[in-house]
Length: 521
Ligand code: SAH
View 1 (cartoon, rainbow, N blue to C red):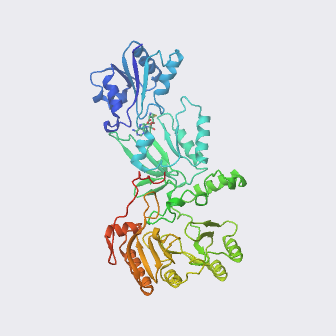
View 2: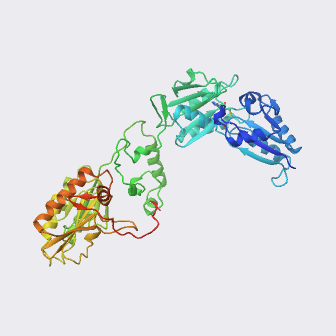
View 3: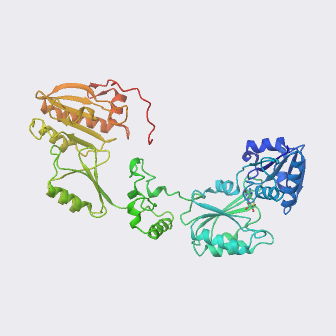
C-alpha cells in the first residue's frame, strides 16, 4: 500500500491562516475531498485537482471515499475547517480505517495536519477571552444525546470554565442554545461577558459582544461560535478579556512588584495552591478547594485582595551579634502562629507577620533591645563584632552609618560592610561598599559583586581615610547612587557604568572565566 491520506485542518477560512504543511499536502494531493462550502474556501489552493465535494451530512461517505482512493495508491486530502481533530474529519477517518482492520505499519499512510480551531480564531477577534481553563462543547445533538450535552454544560458552568459553544444553533436546532443559557445562569451572572463570532476570518465576519443574559437577542447561527466568559472575564474598550490571575501576585501598574522573584513561588504567597508539604496534610483538601473556588469567584475587576504583611530585619545591634533569651521570646511572640522568622546570611533575621498595625510589635521588640530595619532595596550596614568589642575604635562609625544610612531606599539593595581591623574577617571587602579600619583610619573598597560564580571583591579605591571623614564620604556616595542609579541597578554595575563615584575611579576586578549561569537554574 503506497497511498497517503492527509486529514487537513485549513483554519477559520482565510488563506493567511492556513499552515504551510496544509498547503503542501493539498498541493501534493491527487484528490481533495470535502464539504462543498469548504471547497470554495480553499478553491485557489486546489485548482486542477480531482475534487470530491459532498453535502454536509455526508461525512461518512467522504471518509470512505478518501480511504478508498488512498488504498488505490493515490494521495488524498480530506479537508475540515478549523482543526480536523475538533468536531472534524480526523476521528471519523480513523474509525473507518479501524473498522476495516487497517494498521499503521502495513496500511496506507495517514497524517493529520493541525489547523487553527474556531475557539482560537474567534477568541483572537474578541480579545483574550480564553486565557484560562476553557472547554469546547458542541450543542449539536445529532450524534450525541442531549442529556449528555446538558450534563457537560452543567459541569463546565459549575467549574467556572470559559466555554466555547460550537454548533450553537441551526435552522432546526434552536432550543439547545436557550437551554444552555438557562443552565449556565444557575452558576453565572446575567452580565457575564459573551462573545459571538460568526464566520471568523471569512467574508461575512461578524463579531458581537453581549452578555449571558442578552445573548439570545442577537443572531446566532451555524457559522457562529459562542464564547462565554468565566466569573472573572471582563470587557475593556470593546475587548473581552479573561484574567490569567496575575493580579493575585503582581501589581500591574507598578514597575516594582510587591513580591520579589524569589518570593513568588513560596507557599505563603500562593495560599490558593495545592502544596505538597506537611502543612497541607493538616488542612483538608476540601478546605483548599473552597478557598480556590472563593478566589475564582472574586468579582471581575475587583481590586486584588491585599493582606497587610509586616516585614522587618531584626538584629540585636549593628555590632552586637548575641541574642538574649528574652529577645528570642519577644521575637517568637511577634511572629505569632502564622508569622515566619527567617535566618538570613546578612546578620539579621527576617520577621514576617500578618498585621495591619505593626506599632505594638515594633515597640515590644525595641523594649528588649532589638533593632529593626526595613528590608528590600535599602541600605544595610553589616559590621563585624569588633572581636567581641575588644577592637572598639571603629564602633562609633559603624553605629553612625547605621543611624544615618541604614534603611534608606536605594535602586537595589546595598550593603555596607564595616570591619574593625585589617583581618576583615567579616568580609567587608566583599560587600557593595566596604570599609576596613586599620592603623587609625579606613581603607575603602567600592563595588564588590557579592553573588554568583563571577563574584569579585570591591575595588580598593582609597586608604587612610580619617574616621571623622568616613561617614560623610559614604553618605555622599550613597546619595549619588540613590540619585543616578537605574532602578534595580546594583552598586557594582552603577560604579562600572559611570566609571567614577565621588572622585573614585572604577577598575575592572579579575573574575574567574566561568560559563555564566542563566538565572533560575
Ligand atoms: N473543525 C472545526 C469545527 C467544526 S464544527 C474547528 O476546529 O473549528 C462547526 C462549528 O465550528 C460551527 O458551528 C462554528 O461554531 C464553529 N466554526 C468553525 N469555523 C468558524 C468560523 N470561521 N467562525 C466562527 N465559528 C466557526
